[in-house]
Structure formats: C-alpha cells, structure tokens
Length: 401
Image 1 (tube, rainbow, N blue to C red):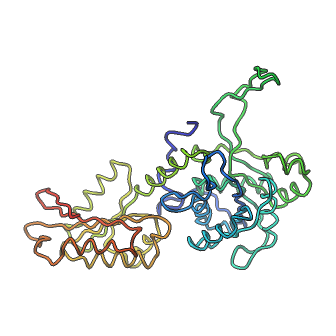
Image 2: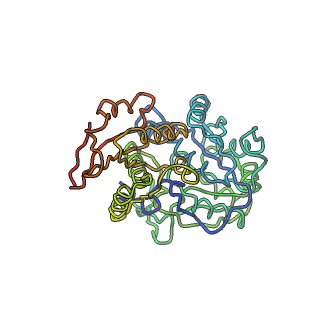
Image 3: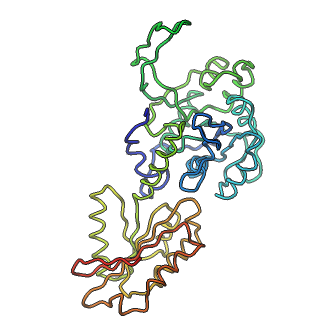
C-alpha cells in the first residue's frame, strides 16, 4: 500500500480537536473560501456508492472533510460541487450534520468543469453562507479529510503573496516513460520531482481568470489547477511541503484505514470530572500520569460549569468519578452532552467510576442497579457508550455489564 503506515504526529487528533493546540503563528486576516469537487463516481473503490458518500463510523466521508474546513474561523464558505443526481443527498448531509458554511452546487462533466462552477459560485454568495468574493480560494479534494489548520494557513498566506500555492510530497515510486510498443523508454530522476497534492490556493482573480481563458481540451482532460494558473495567468505557484496526512481515499482499503485513524484520534483525549472530593482528585491525578505515558491527553476539572463548559464543544471523552454511588452526576453529564448535541458528529465515550473505600459508601449500599445503568443507553443516546466500574482502595475492580 502506498500509504503511510504511521500518518504522523499531526493526526494524533483530528483538526481543531485539541483545546491546547494553536496552529501557526501567522493570522489569516483576509477572506478565504473553499471549493470541494465531489462529483466523482468512485470507480476505483469497486463500490456502488461514490467514496465521498461512504460511511465512516456511520457518517459520510465528505462530512469529515467539510468539518475540517468549517472549524477554521477565517474560512467563510465551503462550496461543495457534486453531480446533479447527488444534489439532494449532499444537501441532506449538510443539513443533518449542520454544516453551516457549506453551499452545494451542481458540477460539470469533468473535474475542471466542476471546479470552475465552484469558483463561479463564489461570486454569487447565498444568504448565511459567506459574504462577498473571497481574496483567496482553496481547492481541496472531498476525499482528503485529514487536513489541518496549520497547512491551510500556509497555503492561504502563500497564495495571497504569490498568486498561487500548492502542497507537494516526495514521490513514492519511480516514474518511467514507455514506448508505444510497451517497452521502457526512460525513467525520471525521482529526487528532482514531487507529487502534486491538495490543498491548493489561489487569489480569486488568478483562478477565475485561468478558468475563463483555458480551452475545452483543458477542461475535459486537464487535472492540475496550478498548471492552468501558470499557463494562462503567468502565475508561478509557491510549492509547500505537506505532511503525510494529505493522502487521498482512493481504494476500498483506504476507507478502512481512514476509519481506523478517526477512531484512534477520537480516543486520545479525555476529561475527568472530580467534583470537590479529595479522593477523586487523587485518582484523577494517577489516571493523568497513566494517560501521559500512553501519549494521551487527560484534563482534570471539577465540573462543566463556567469556562469548563467549553469541553462540551470539543471532541473529548469524559470520565465521571463519583463517591456517592448515585447516577445523578453522570445523568447530568449526559444531559449536558445531549443539549450540546455532541454525539451528532462523533461518538462520545462516557466512563462512570464509582470510587469506594472504607470511609465511602459501596455501590451495593446505594440504590443504583445494573438495570438503571443500562437505561442510560436508551435509543435517544445510541451514539454514546456508557460503562460502569467500581474501584476499591485495595485496587480491585468490578465491572457492571
């Protein structure tokens, strides 16, 4: 597989997930919009459903890509260009997953024709989706969901300065030329060449002019937007080395790899709620040390009040430590998560830990029964997973089903 076995540190968590993450020191202070061509049929996957609409953990792949851009505060609009027969489906996805920056437009018969329609649509902003023609347009593939804000800011800033910019990666395989009879003609020196990747950025004037001037042959057979900017606008793009996470979901096996990456990233960060109990704080501190050894993040907070309520908006899991054996605290946590609609985009794992000891009530002395815990996993909470275990001061652990 020509895919990185280890996607790299930038996939330790999904874009925008870490509240401590501050990507890039340069602020993008000009309007930027995005065009996502998503009209492909996905023939290489061998599936009936185009890969951009295939589900990853029950959610379409294209929704993850749209979310990666919507999380970036300085991106004002995301134009998704789809085949005419997929317009209703894409609009349903945008509505269901509340992609407020997404605008869906019909595409053309080829990739370039679809991108051209997306660029033209940015001159006709709809109400509540962007405001005016952007300074920079970022073009990206709908099936490349792992793009982070740091890379996007580098592309946007370089595009503004140079007129065009694009991500590149080292070639994985040697490129050869063949004769018409099927024999080797010559090979290229791999060190001198790079693979063109996405995202790519352009000033609106450059990309709009390039598509106005290009020929029908370009629109029907071309694949490289940077080449159009060079050929028809004289704009030589600034090339930026991209991370290995820019790979594209192309084959069926890539869907499984992408889902595995998403699952792993969603398990990297948790938040422990301790209340004001010293025993709970002590346990949380021990858990934090254990998480650190596994290169995972664990924050400790007393509750979700005040500034701590921001954790409800982030893709973190929750560990509720309780000493009274009552489900009231975990019920309150689930109610807060439901109100924030956290399970809409990704599953949320809630772990309830009942801390028992000589000076604390045991779970058997409370009214909590396994049936009451099971009731928490009602149909309305089907995207949430709830566990319960009791931890004694002697170190023994018992798990309720």
